[in-house]
Length: 477
Image (cartoon, rainbow, N blue to C red; front, side, top):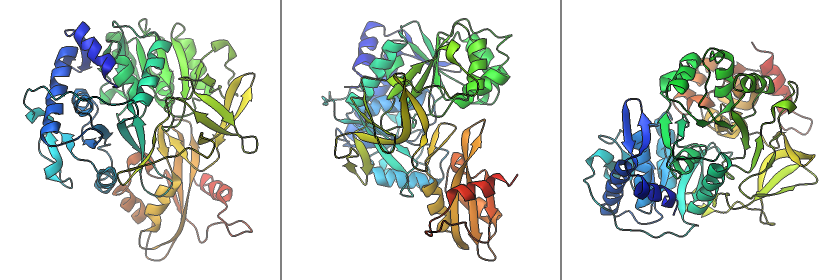
């Protein structure tokens, strides 16, 4: 079971600090006791092994209690992004067919109160032991979907455990490490924080949300807390490099930084590497479906400002195949998800040859993989996966919209941003469309530009000319 290394730490060092959130902390023993109470509460509700349980909590100590409680009950957890509009949250809860929703206090409006379980109301209790095979589902992480709706990626206990073990070994995690956590638990990056860190007896320190937009205060916090490792997105590290006052705030304790989710602009990485000369840097790569399938230990002497860095070597024992015609990266290995979760059913996603086709175009240069962009239209925005088709589906359903197209615009701070071209019928306006979108889609999916056109440009075969759409939108400042 995925929590086996964590349970070992609870037996070995129950008094050691597991979680720190501002002035609140929880020991390994206390975390286990709280999680066991939640697990017993779920079992009392009739939740059976393998059934999905939603987690309606913000990043912090309480969400770890809830997630570990769900796993101890044998359930799989479905972490919700509370910043999502209510209709999107409701869709995920319906699609996952959850059997309970874990949270604090009373059930929020829009959620079935009969499914709600307040984790603070769970009495101290020991759950019935559950034995699960490695292929049992541990988590369903919902990402933006090309079908126009969020899509659940189902991760097994074995898949997450194999990544956590590999990553913990890679950076030589020890029980005296202090690891920063800034990643929401609906991101696959969080599997490192939860299972690699707590599986090795280290302490997880939650980065205060207010510091994310204040890099100088963030670097001061990293120093004060003697943080030794952190797994986050390149855009945040680039912000820290440029604005974090690192020259006057040396981070002597910082052993390693892991980053993933988007391309790290090489000039920013060069700056970061120079300011943190003794910190090991690792570029992780892979869609949610593979967690991490490639990695590159950053070699400072090879960084060239006008060249993208490699995505590197196979990770977690993965095998690669590069399609000879398209250059698409195919992956198979122990860390792959089990498939897509749709209406309570698991849908396999391997191709006929037994590989997962990532949609990423790569090449092999001197034994290392290089990334050359997506074959499809998917965007990466500040680490979030954004499918333009989901935005287009929401816009096309609005009154007054005759046609629309979404493309990605390069953004040095976020990698990419979606931009929207519209063909409207009177009296609809771009401002009204923007207002309506805020009620339906999360902030990271909101178009950075919204431009009305008389017609969308098309190719001779009648298909949309997305390159011309992008050119028109980039011309709008």
